[in-house]
Amino acid sequence: MTNSTTAGASAPAPLTARTTALTVHQTARPDGFPTREHFAFVESEIPAPTPGTALVETLYLSVDPYHREMMDGDFELNAPLEGRTLGRVIASREPSLREGEIVLHRQGWRTHALVAADEVRRIPAFDGVPLNAHLSVFGGTGLTAYVGLTRIAQLREGQDLFVSAAAGGVGTATGRFAKLLGAGRVVGSAGTLEKVEYLTDEVGYDAAFDYRAGPVGEQLARVAPDGIDLMVDNVGGEHLAAGITALREFGRVVRIGTVGQYNTPDSPPVLFNHADVVEKSLRIEGFLVRNHYDVQQELYEFAVPHLQAGRLRLDETVVDGFESIVDAFSSMLRGGNVGKMIVRA
Ligand SMILES: NC(=O)c1ccc[n+]([C@@H]2O[C@H](COP(=O)([O-])OP(=O)(O)OC[C@H]3O[C@@H](n4cnc5c(N)ncnc54)[C@H](OP(=O)(O)O)[C@@H]3O)[C@@H](O)[C@H]2O)c1
Image (cartoon, rainbow, N blue to C red; front, side, top):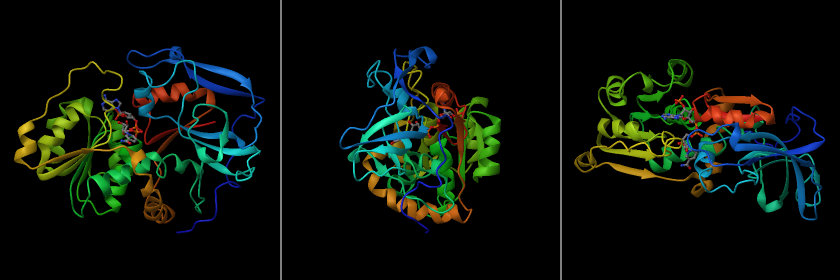
Protein backbone atom coordinates (compact mmCIF):
# COMPACT_ATOMS: atom_id res chain seq x y z
CA MET A 1 0.00 0.00 0.00
CA THR A 2 1.43 3.38 -0.98
CA ASN A 3 0.95 5.85 1.79
CA SER A 4 2.68 9.19 2.05
CA THR A 5 2.16 11.36 5.13
CA THR A 6 -1.03 13.43 5.04
CA ALA A 7 -3.13 14.72 2.18
CA GLY A 8 -2.59 18.36 1.29
CA ALA A 9 -0.65 19.52 -1.70
CA SER A 10 -2.86 17.73 -4.21
CA ALA A 11 -6.13 18.86 -2.63
CA PRO A 12 -8.20 21.27 -4.72
CA ALA A 13 -9.00 24.83 -3.69
CA PRO A 14 -12.61 25.58 -2.72
CA LEU A 15 -14.87 26.47 -5.68
CA THR A 16 -15.54 29.94 -4.28
CA ALA A 17 -12.97 32.33 -2.78
CA ARG A 18 -14.89 33.81 0.16
CA THR A 19 -14.54 37.02 2.12
CA THR A 20 -17.22 36.02 4.66
CA ALA A 21 -18.17 32.72 6.30
CA LEU A 22 -21.47 30.85 5.78
CA THR A 23 -23.05 28.47 8.27
CA VAL A 24 -26.28 26.48 7.85
CA HIS A 25 -28.71 26.44 10.77
CA GLN A 26 -31.79 24.29 11.16
CA THR A 27 -34.62 26.72 11.90
CA ALA A 28 -37.66 24.41 12.19
CA ARG A 29 -38.49 20.73 12.75
CA PRO A 30 -39.61 19.04 9.53
CA ASP A 31 -42.79 16.99 9.49
CA GLY A 32 -41.89 14.57 6.72
CA PHE A 33 -39.30 15.53 4.12
CA PRO A 34 -37.20 18.63 4.96
CA THR A 35 -37.28 21.56 2.56
CA ARG A 36 -35.36 24.84 2.21
CA GLU A 37 -37.83 26.45 4.64
CA HIS A 38 -36.35 24.42 7.51
CA PHE A 39 -32.89 25.94 7.11
CA ALA A 40 -31.13 29.31 7.00
CA PHE A 41 -27.73 30.31 5.60
CA VAL A 42 -26.15 32.60 8.19
CA GLU A 43 -23.34 34.93 7.11
CA SER A 44 -20.60 36.10 9.49
CA GLU A 45 -17.01 37.27 9.50
CA ILE A 46 -14.41 34.60 8.88
CA PRO A 47 -13.22 33.81 12.43
CA ALA A 48 -9.59 34.31 13.43
CA PRO A 49 -7.85 31.46 15.26
CA THR A 50 -7.56 31.85 19.01
CA PRO A 51 -4.64 30.29 20.93
CA GLY A 52 -4.86 26.49 20.60
CA THR A 53 -7.10 26.52 17.52
CA ALA A 54 -6.74 26.52 13.76
CA LEU A 55 -8.98 27.93 11.05
CA VAL A 56 -10.10 25.27 8.57
CA GLU A 57 -11.58 26.15 5.19
CA THR A 58 -14.12 23.57 4.02
CA LEU A 59 -13.44 21.58 0.83
CA TYR A 60 -15.94 18.69 0.94
CA LEU A 61 -18.98 17.95 3.14
CA SER A 62 -20.93 14.80 3.78
CA VAL A 63 -24.75 14.88 3.92
CA ASP A 64 -26.16 11.78 5.59
CA PRO A 65 -29.48 10.14 6.43
CA TYR A 66 -28.65 10.36 10.16
CA HIS A 67 -28.88 14.15 9.86
CA ARG A 68 -32.57 13.68 9.13
CA GLU A 69 -33.01 11.55 12.25
CA MET A 70 -31.31 14.22 14.37
CA MET A 71 -33.45 17.01 12.92
CA ASP A 72 -36.47 15.70 14.84
CA GLY A 73 -35.00 16.83 18.17
CA ASP A 74 -31.28 16.17 18.61
CA PHE A 75 -30.06 19.19 16.63
CA GLU A 76 -30.59 22.47 18.43
CA LEU A 77 -32.62 24.96 16.37
CA ASN A 78 -30.91 28.14 15.10
CA ALA A 79 -27.48 26.64 15.73
CA PRO A 80 -24.94 25.23 13.25
CA LEU A 81 -25.52 21.66 12.07
CA GLU A 82 -22.82 19.07 12.64
CA GLY A 83 -21.44 16.65 10.07
CA ARG A 84 -18.30 15.15 8.59
CA THR A 85 -16.24 17.75 6.74
CA LEU A 86 -12.89 17.75 4.95
CA GLY A 87 -10.99 21.02 4.98
CA ARG A 88 -7.63 22.67 4.78
CA VAL A 89 -5.94 24.55 7.64
CA ILE A 90 -5.52 28.14 6.40
CA ALA A 91 -4.37 29.80 9.63
CA SER A 92 -3.21 28.32 12.90
CA ARG A 93 -2.36 29.19 16.47
CA GLU A 94 -2.04 25.50 17.37
CA PRO A 95 1.50 24.19 16.76
CA SER A 96 0.33 20.66 15.90
CA LEU A 97 -1.96 21.91 13.10
CA ARG A 98 0.10 23.34 10.27
CA GLU A 99 -1.18 25.59 7.50
CA GLY A 100 -1.96 23.54 4.39
CA GLU A 101 -2.79 20.34 6.30
CA ILE A 102 -5.98 18.50 5.34
CA VAL A 103 -8.14 17.42 8.26
CA LEU A 104 -11.49 15.77 8.88
CA HIS A 105 -13.75 17.31 11.52
CA ARG A 106 -17.42 17.19 12.51
CA GLN A 107 -18.33 20.85 12.77
CA GLY A 108 -20.39 20.32 9.70
CA TRP A 109 -22.36 22.58 7.45
CA ARG A 110 -20.14 25.65 7.35
CA THR A 111 -17.51 27.14 5.07
CA HIS A 112 -15.03 27.82 7.90
CA ALA A 113 -14.44 26.15 11.27
CA LEU A 114 -12.23 26.90 14.25
CA VAL A 115 -10.93 23.57 15.52
CA ALA A 116 -8.75 22.34 18.37
CA ALA A 117 -6.23 19.56 17.77
CA ASP A 118 -8.39 16.94 19.50
CA GLU A 119 -11.37 17.77 17.25
CA VAL A 120 -9.71 16.70 14.00
CA ARG A 121 -8.36 13.60 12.35
CA ARG A 122 -5.51 13.87 9.87
CA ILE A 123 -6.20 12.30 6.52
CA PRO A 124 -3.53 10.00 5.09
CA ALA A 125 -2.66 10.54 1.43
CA PHE A 126 -2.60 7.47 -0.79
CA ASP A 127 -1.26 7.68 -4.34
CA GLY A 128 -4.09 7.84 -6.84
CA VAL A 129 -6.80 8.24 -4.19
CA PRO A 130 -8.75 11.51 -4.42
CA LEU A 131 -9.54 13.46 -1.29
CA ASN A 132 -13.30 12.95 -1.57
CA ALA A 133 -12.76 9.18 -1.13
CA HIS A 134 -12.24 9.99 2.57
CA LEU A 135 -15.93 10.87 2.78
CA SER A 136 -17.09 7.87 0.73
CA VAL A 137 -15.31 4.54 0.58
CA PHE A 138 -12.75 5.40 3.31
CA GLY A 139 -15.15 7.55 5.35
CA GLY A 140 -17.95 6.56 7.71
CA THR A 141 -19.83 5.17 4.70
CA GLY A 142 -17.16 2.69 3.63
CA LEU A 143 -16.31 1.85 7.23
CA THR A 144 -19.96 1.04 7.90
CA ALA A 145 -20.04 -1.31 4.91
CA TYR A 146 -16.76 -2.97 5.91
CA VAL A 147 -17.69 -3.41 9.59
CA GLY A 148 -21.12 -4.69 8.59
CA LEU A 149 -19.64 -7.41 6.39
CA THR A 150 -16.56 -8.41 8.38
CA ARG A 151 -17.55 -7.88 12.02
CA ILE A 152 -21.34 -8.16 12.17
CA ALA A 153 -22.21 -10.48 9.27
CA GLN A 154 -18.86 -12.27 9.49
CA LEU A 155 -19.16 -12.95 5.76
CA ARG A 156 -17.59 -16.20 4.61
CA GLU A 157 -16.51 -17.05 1.10
CA GLY A 158 -19.33 -18.11 -1.20
CA GLN A 159 -22.14 -16.76 0.98
CA ASP A 160 -25.09 -15.14 -0.79
CA LEU A 161 -26.16 -11.64 0.19
CA PHE A 162 -29.11 -9.25 -0.20
CA VAL A 163 -28.49 -5.51 0.29
CA SER A 164 -31.31 -2.93 0.57
CA ALA A 165 -30.75 0.68 -0.59
CA ALA A 166 -28.00 -0.97 -2.61
CA ALA A 167 -27.31 2.01 -4.90
CA GLY A 168 -26.53 4.44 -2.06
CA GLY A 169 -23.21 5.08 -0.36
CA VAL A 170 -23.27 2.19 2.08
CA GLY A 171 -25.04 -0.08 -0.43
CA THR A 172 -22.54 0.34 -3.27
CA ALA A 173 -19.58 -0.04 -0.91
CA THR A 174 -21.19 -3.17 0.57
CA GLY A 175 -21.67 -4.73 -2.86
CA ARG A 176 -18.13 -3.98 -4.00
CA PHE A 177 -16.50 -5.07 -0.72
CA ALA A 178 -18.60 -8.25 -0.57
CA LYS A 179 -17.38 -9.34 -4.01
CA LEU A 180 -13.76 -8.53 -3.11
CA LEU A 181 -14.18 -10.54 0.12
CA GLY A 182 -15.35 -13.57 -1.86
CA ALA A 183 -19.13 -13.45 -1.46
CA GLY A 184 -21.26 -15.67 -3.66
CA ARG A 185 -24.36 -14.19 -5.29
CA VAL A 186 -24.94 -10.55 -4.33
CA VAL A 187 -28.36 -9.03 -5.02
CA GLY A 188 -29.77 -5.62 -4.16
CA SER A 189 -32.77 -3.31 -4.31
CA ALA A 190 -32.94 0.32 -5.38
CA GLY A 191 -35.56 2.93 -6.23
CA THR A 192 -35.24 3.27 -10.03
CA LEU A 193 -34.51 1.14 -13.06
CA GLU A 194 -31.44 3.29 -13.82
CA LYS A 195 -30.04 2.44 -10.39
CA VAL A 196 -30.81 -1.24 -10.90
CA GLU A 197 -28.80 -1.15 -14.15
CA TYR A 198 -25.98 0.75 -12.44
CA LEU A 199 -25.79 -1.94 -9.75
CA THR A 200 -25.48 -4.80 -12.22
CA ASP A 201 -23.48 -3.03 -14.94
CA GLU A 202 -21.06 -0.99 -12.81
CA VAL A 203 -20.97 -2.13 -9.21
CA GLY A 204 -20.87 -5.88 -9.75
CA TYR A 205 -24.21 -6.94 -8.27
CA ASP A 206 -25.36 -10.24 -9.79
CA ALA A 207 -28.97 -9.07 -9.87
CA ALA A 208 -31.06 -6.17 -8.61
CA PHE A 209 -34.65 -4.97 -8.62
CA ASP A 210 -36.63 -1.74 -8.38
CA TYR A 211 -38.48 -1.93 -5.05
CA ARG A 212 -41.14 0.47 -6.33
CA ALA A 213 -42.08 -1.91 -9.17
CA GLY A 214 -43.80 -4.55 -7.00
CA PRO A 215 -43.81 -6.29 -3.60
CA VAL A 216 -40.26 -6.56 -2.28
CA GLY A 217 -40.73 -10.17 -1.14
CA GLU A 218 -41.84 -11.34 -4.58
CA GLN A 219 -39.05 -9.49 -6.35
CA LEU A 220 -36.42 -10.79 -3.94
CA ALA A 221 -37.68 -14.35 -4.46
CA ARG A 222 -37.21 -13.87 -8.22
CA VAL A 223 -33.58 -12.64 -8.00
CA ALA A 224 -32.61 -15.02 -5.18
CA PRO A 225 -34.74 -18.11 -5.82
CA ASP A 226 -32.50 -20.33 -3.65
CA GLY A 227 -32.50 -17.90 -0.71
CA ILE A 228 -29.73 -15.89 0.93
CA ASP A 229 -27.25 -16.35 3.77
CA LEU A 230 -27.02 -12.69 4.76
CA MET A 231 -29.03 -9.50 4.53
CA VAL A 232 -27.44 -6.06 4.91
CA ASP A 233 -30.43 -3.87 5.67
CA ASN A 234 -30.32 -0.10 5.21
CA VAL A 235 -34.09 0.36 4.93
CA GLY A 236 -36.19 -1.70 7.37
CA GLY A 237 -39.94 -2.30 6.93
CA GLU A 238 -40.97 -4.38 3.93
CA HIS A 239 -37.33 -4.92 2.95
CA LEU A 240 -36.46 -6.41 6.33
CA ALA A 241 -39.51 -8.68 6.27
CA ALA A 242 -38.61 -9.92 2.77
CA GLY A 243 -35.01 -10.54 3.79
CA ILE A 244 -36.04 -12.60 6.83
CA THR A 245 -38.29 -14.73 4.65
CA ALA A 246 -35.47 -15.33 2.14
CA LEU A 247 -32.81 -16.22 4.73
CA ARG A 248 -31.60 -19.80 4.96
CA GLU A 249 -30.96 -21.65 8.20
CA PHE A 250 -28.36 -19.89 10.40
CA GLY A 251 -28.77 -16.72 8.31
CA ARG A 252 -27.92 -13.28 9.62
CA VAL A 253 -29.39 -9.79 9.23
CA VAL A 254 -27.06 -6.85 9.66
CA ARG A 255 -29.24 -3.87 10.56
CA ILE A 256 -27.48 -0.71 9.42
CA GLY A 257 -30.26 1.84 9.09
CA THR A 258 -33.94 2.50 8.63
CA VAL A 259 -33.96 5.09 5.84
CA GLY A 260 -37.45 3.95 4.78
CA GLN A 261 -38.84 5.52 7.97
CA TYR A 262 -36.87 8.72 8.63
CA ASN A 263 -39.33 10.92 6.73
CA THR A 264 -42.45 8.90 7.53
CA PRO A 265 -42.01 7.93 11.20
CA ASP A 266 -45.75 7.35 11.67
CA SER A 267 -46.08 4.74 8.93
CA PRO A 268 -47.19 1.39 10.39
CA PRO A 269 -44.32 -1.04 10.95
CA VAL A 270 -44.31 -4.00 8.59
CA LEU A 271 -44.36 -7.26 10.49
CA PHE A 272 -42.03 -10.15 9.81
CA ASN A 273 -42.49 -13.78 10.64
CA HIS A 274 -41.19 -14.01 14.20
CA ALA A 275 -41.23 -17.81 14.14
CA ASP A 276 -38.76 -17.72 11.23
CA VAL A 277 -36.14 -16.25 13.55
CA VAL A 278 -36.40 -19.28 15.83
CA GLU A 279 -36.98 -22.03 13.32
CA LYS A 280 -34.17 -20.91 11.00
CA SER A 281 -31.85 -20.00 13.93
CA LEU A 282 -31.42 -16.47 12.59
CA ARG A 283 -29.38 -13.69 14.13
CA ILE A 284 -30.40 -10.03 13.74
CA GLU A 285 -27.76 -7.53 14.87
CA GLY A 286 -27.46 -3.79 14.53
CA PHE A 287 -24.44 -1.57 15.12
CA LEU A 288 -23.22 2.02 15.04
CA VAL A 289 -20.07 2.74 13.10
CA ARG A 290 -18.87 5.15 15.77
CA ASN A 291 -18.20 2.13 18.00
CA HIS A 292 -15.88 0.62 15.39
CA TYR A 293 -13.33 3.31 14.53
CA ASP A 294 -10.60 0.87 15.53
CA VAL A 295 -11.26 -0.89 12.18
CA GLN A 296 -10.31 2.22 10.12
CA GLN A 297 -6.67 1.17 9.57
CA GLU A 298 -7.75 -2.31 8.50
CA LEU A 299 -10.15 -0.74 5.99
CA TYR A 300 -7.27 1.24 4.45
CA GLU A 301 -5.13 -1.90 4.27
CA PHE A 302 -7.94 -3.84 2.60
CA ALA A 303 -9.34 -1.22 0.23
CA VAL A 304 -6.46 1.04 -0.84
CA PRO A 305 -4.60 -1.64 -2.85
CA HIS A 306 -7.87 -2.63 -4.57
CA LEU A 307 -8.54 1.01 -5.43
CA GLN A 308 -5.02 1.61 -6.69
CA ALA A 309 -5.22 -1.54 -8.84
CA GLY A 310 -8.61 -0.55 -10.29
CA ARG A 311 -10.51 -3.47 -8.72
CA LEU A 312 -12.45 -1.04 -6.53
CA ARG A 313 -14.07 2.15 -7.82
CA LEU A 314 -15.69 5.10 -6.12
CA ASP A 315 -19.46 5.50 -6.33
CA GLU A 316 -20.22 9.14 -5.57
CA THR A 317 -22.60 11.92 -6.50
CA VAL A 318 -20.66 15.16 -6.00
CA VAL A 319 -22.77 18.33 -5.94
CA ASP A 320 -20.92 21.60 -6.51
CA GLY A 321 -21.29 24.66 -4.30
CA PHE A 322 -21.72 25.10 -0.55
CA GLU A 323 -25.00 26.91 -1.24
CA SER A 324 -26.33 23.60 -2.71
CA ILE A 325 -25.97 21.68 0.55
CA VAL A 326 -29.61 21.82 1.62
CA ASP A 327 -30.82 20.75 -1.83
CA ALA A 328 -28.21 17.98 -1.94
CA PHE A 329 -29.34 16.71 1.45
CA SER A 330 -33.03 16.74 0.50
CA SER A 331 -32.26 15.09 -2.83
CA MET A 332 -30.32 12.28 -1.13
CA LEU A 333 -33.29 11.52 1.13
CA ARG A 334 -35.48 11.17 -1.96
CA GLY A 335 -32.98 8.96 -3.79
CA GLY A 336 -31.32 11.64 -5.95
CA ASN A 337 -27.88 10.15 -5.38
CA VAL A 338 -25.99 7.19 -6.78
CA GLY A 339 -23.30 6.19 -4.31
CA LYS A 340 -22.23 8.58 -1.56
CA MET A 341 -23.72 12.09 -1.71
CA ILE A 342 -20.94 14.67 -1.24
CA VAL A 343 -20.97 18.46 -1.52
CA ARG A 344 -17.91 20.23 -2.88
CA ALA A 345 -17.65 23.66 -1.25
N1 LIG B 1 -25.26 2.15 11.59
C1 LIG B 1 -24.44 3.14 11.26
O1 LIG B 1 -23.50 3.49 11.96
C2 LIG B 1 -24.68 3.83 9.95
C3 LIG B 1 -23.67 4.59 9.32
C4 LIG B 1 -23.93 5.16 8.06
C5 LIG B 1 -25.18 5.00 7.48
N2 LIG B 1 -26.13 4.30 8.14
C6 LIG B 1 -27.45 4.04 7.54
O2 LIG B 1 -27.22 3.39 6.29
C7 LIG B 1 -28.26 3.68 5.39
C8 LIG B 1 -27.67 4.22 4.08
O3 LIG B 1 -26.97 5.42 4.38
P1 LIG B 1 -26.12 6.16 3.25
O4 LIG B 1 -25.39 7.24 3.93
O5 LIG B 1 -25.39 5.17 2.45
O6 LIG B 1 -27.26 6.84 2.38
P2 LIG B 1 -27.60 6.53 0.87
O7 LIG B 1 -28.02 5.09 0.80
O8 LIG B 1 -26.48 6.98 0.03
O9 LIG B 1 -28.82 7.51 0.61
C9 LIG B 1 -30.09 7.23 1.08
C10 LIG B 1 -30.84 6.33 0.06
O10 LIG B 1 -31.96 5.78 0.71
C11 LIG B 1 -32.87 5.36 -0.27
N3 LIG B 1 -34.23 5.55 0.24
C12 LIG B 1 -34.83 6.70 0.63
N4 LIG B 1 -36.09 6.45 1.04
C13 LIG B 1 -36.28 5.12 0.90
C14 LIG B 1 -37.38 4.23 1.16
N5 LIG B 1 -38.55 4.69 1.64
N6 LIG B 1 -37.22 2.92 0.90
C15 LIG B 1 -36.06 2.44 0.41
N7 LIG B 1 -34.98 3.21 0.14
C16 LIG B 1 -35.10 4.53 0.40
C17 LIG B 1 -32.62 6.26 -1.50
O11 LIG B 1 -32.27 5.41 -2.60
P3 LIG B 1 -33.41 4.76 -3.57
O12 LIG B 1 -33.40 5.59 -4.83
O13 LIG B 1 -32.89 3.39 -3.79
O14 LIG B 1 -34.71 4.83 -2.87
C18 LIG B 1 -31.41 7.10 -1.11
O15 LIG B 1 -30.47 7.23 -2.16
C19 LIG B 1 -29.18 4.67 6.10
O16 LIG B 1 -30.23 3.96 6.70
C20 LIG B 1 -28.28 5.26 7.18
O17 LIG B 1 -29.00 5.76 8.28
C21 LIG B 1 -25.91 3.73 9.34
